[in-house]
Image (cartoon, rainbow, N blue to C red; front, side, top):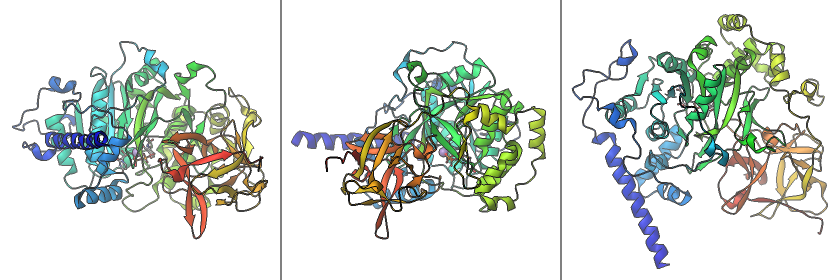
Length: 604
Ligand code: UD2
Ligand code: MN
C-alpha cells in the first residue's frame, strides 16, 4: 500500500506540475504583447494588424511545433479522472459553467494538454498504406461560435501537431461572431504570439450560423483541397494523408474521416466502429451498420466505404469542385440539414462520398446543443424543408407524413437552388434511393408495414434471414432484474422496463441476431430513438434490418458489459420514472448500472 500511495501522490503531483507548468507557459495572461485587431477587406489584414510593433515570430521556427512542453503524454482513464477532481469552489464553478455553456466537462478540458497523445484507433493494416509524395495541400477551416477556449485550441494544436507542414497550407479559424467576453481578442493574441503564421483568424460581421460561416471561411481559403472540422476535435495519426489522396484521385471524390468519440464527460478517446451514414424520414442523420459479411475480406477495413450521407462536420473536398457544386445553401440558418443537403447534392449531381477508414478524427459528442438561434427559430425544420423541396422530389411526402406541422413553416425562397440543380443537370431522388441508398425503407403510409426498396438492390446482398446467436433473459446485472415489454410481445411501440425475471415468460425472451438486433420472442426489435436533444425510452419496433436505432453491440469497459448502439454512440441504461424502471441510452461509462448480460434461462 505504501508504494501504491507514493505512486498515487506522485502521479497527482506530476499531473499538477504539468498543469501548472502548462498554464504558465500558455495562459494568455502571461502574454504581454497586445496586437490590435483590425477588420479590413483583404483577408490578409483581417486577422491582425501588420503594423503592430510586436513583430510576428519567424513562422518557420513554429512550423513544426510538436510538444514544446514535453507534454505529449497519454492520458489514460486514471489520469483523466485526476484532471476532473474538484478541489476548490473555483473548480466547481468552472465545471458547472462549462456544462452550462458548452455541454462538456470543461474542467478536464482546461487541464488537459493541447498536445495529448491519442490511442491510434486505425486498423493495423493502415500502418502499411503509403501515399503519393505529391499530395495536394489543404486549407483546414474551423468555424466556432462561443467555443470553449481549451477545446478550440486543442483542435488547432492537434492539426498542427499531426499534419506534415508541407500538406497544411493554412488553418482558417472562423469566429462566427461569438459573444463570449474577449474570446476573440484572446484567441487573436494567442495565435499571434504562439502559433505559426499559417494560422489565420477571421471574424464574421454578424452571426452567420455554421453553414454560412463555412462559406465565409471557404471564400478566404486558397489551397487545392478544403478540409472542414468542428471546433472541438482532435485529429489522430496520419489523419490528413488518406483524405487528400482520395480527393486527389478524382476532384468529385468527397472524403470523410471516421469520427471517433471524445467522451464529453471524461474526455476519453474512443474508436468508432466502421459504419456508414444514412437518414430517417424525419430528415435526421443516422448511422447504419454495414451488411453482414462486409468485412469478410480484410482489405475492406482500409478501403473507402461508400456512404449515402455524411454526418456533416468533417470532410475534405476539392476547393474548385466545392464552388462549382454550389457550396452550401446560403438560405440555411445556424444549424442542421446542411449535411443531408450536401450529401444528396453530391450524389445526385455525379460526385461521390466515402468514409475513409484510415483517417480518424475525434469529436466531442455532446448530449445537447448549448446554443440556440438568435430569434429562437427551429432552424433544423426550416433547413430540412429547403433541402427537401430542392432535392427530394415527391419523396417529400414522407417527411410531411412524419412532420405534418412542417407544411405551415416558411422556408424562404429556393429559386437559386432549384436553378443550381437544373444547371448541374442532377439526377432524381428516386435515382439516389435506387442506386446509392437501396437499403432505405419507405415509412408506413397507410399503416401497412414499411416497404423496403429491396427490388432496387445494387451491390449489397439482400438481407439474410435472421440468424440467432443467443436466446435468453436480458438481465440487468446490478439489480438482477430482466428486460421485458410493458405490453404484449406483438404490440409495436410498447415500452420496455425492468421486472423480476420469470422463466418461460415470452415477454422476457430475447434473441440476439448476427445483425446485432435484439428480438423479443423473435418478433419485434429493441429500439431506441435518439435525437441530438434528448433520448426516448427503449421500446419495441418492427425490425427494419438497417441497423441504426436497432443495432446493439456487446462491449466491455472495465468489466462492465454494455450494450452499445453505434448509431447514437451510446449505451443502454435503466431510467427510473415514477416508480417504474424504463430503459434509455446514455453516454457509455463504466458505471455498473450499464452492465447487462444475455442469460440462457432454459435450465430454470
Ligand atoms: C453535426 C455536425 C456539424 C453540423 C451539424 C448539422 C459532426 C461531427 N458535427 O452537429 O458539423 O454538420 O451536425 O448542422 O458531424 N457553429 C458556428 N456558428 C453557429 C453554430 C455553430 O460556427 O451559429 C460551429 C460550432 O462551434 C461547431 C460547428 O459549427 O464548431 C458545428 O456545430 P455543433 O458542434 O454544435 O454541431 P454538432 O456536432 O452537434
Ligand atoms: Mn460538433
